[in-house]
Image (cartoon, rainbow, N blue to C red; front, side):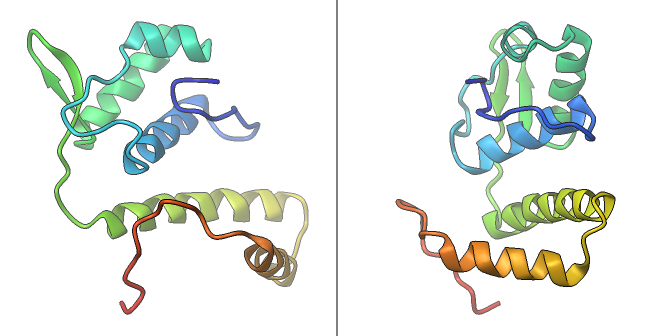
Length: 137
């Protein structure tokens, strides 16, 4: 298990995978606002990636305001008071882009993707302990 609870996938840059995993962990509230975020050294060691890549990930998350660098304290999760639905949508869009890229590289049709997605959706059990979402938008 890694600090972000994910496994690397082929065909996508490591930097991008770690950034997406970190953002997903923050959105899922595995890391709360104000909480210390794993250091470059911890991320590099835990994920077995180059420290420069881990540093680049942290810097990107600070630039995108997912994290804050606090002198004397370290890097902490930023308080992103706002519309969590927009954050989920952005993360979902990235997942869909990866799915489409993979499906296209395998020669699957849009109908194949929709059929499989529909089947998986219908077979899925609703997640436990999730806040109800407003689907009226």
